[in-house]
Length: 317
Image 1 (cartoon, rainbow, N blue to C red):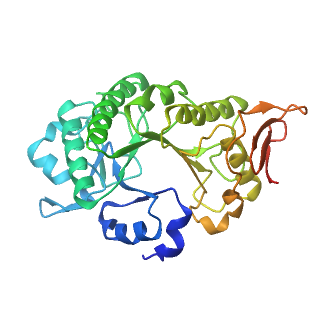
Image 2 (image 1 turned 180 degrees about the vertical axis):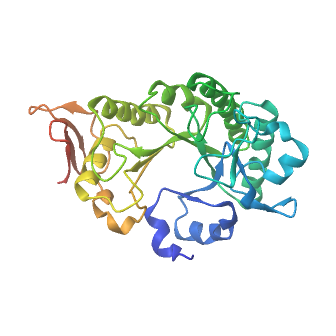
Image 3 (image 1 turned 90 degrees about the vertical axis):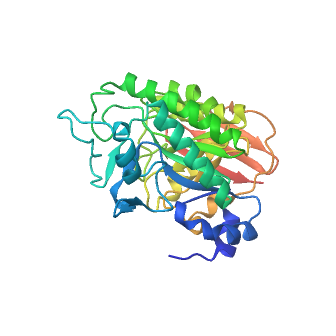
């Protein structure tokens, strides 16, 4: 796969790539010096697909390699109810690691910080900041959602601290955020930002409740208050309709401060010209207008969200 970065990069505030894609970094920076370039790393798995003949590949999709861990630290692998390795449901080459183990946490942080420095990444996208016990299969080590959350909070605290101390950004993908809405604000101080992978929709239409909408708005608001780089992505990984994009963009802009990033469902900027409306600086906070809808005004226009019809409007002056 290849990209014309001169055409692509200027349209993004943040770009996440696999570890082995680091040769693209110079071209991306030349096309957009302000973009933040992230290396993808899974927090909680190691993968047999990334090692062969007993040796891990040089550039890993995880922070700790399967072959090295199996040879030197088999205690870092979580077990299933029968004592075998916990293979992640739906991913036959992925095995869940003991993310609550301080030694595993430290090795993960050290490995990733070294790789970020070696190849000039701005930061790391940390996938699978787990908060449910059965995300990929239940381990007796963490049989409840609460035990999973305690272990993951400890990992994010250690890893986030070390990545930030190295001068890099650490953004964690937090799932089931509307099921446990308090986790977003609780975990945000440990990292440079959080990612909401299915903001305001799991599919191609608005399929969240009013409580979910409020939870999403609080996420945007908390990231703005902390001046953190959080990522919000619209719906499914496919082309999503302009009506959903308009609703999400307007909802996001009610509280965004220009630091976080909003991305389209299929990540193809050219499919979503409405996301690139330049409204300029905000003139104040969001408010309920005379029609009972949420509105925020900017130097170059306004956004309005109607929760009775689940629609949003972004208008330029």
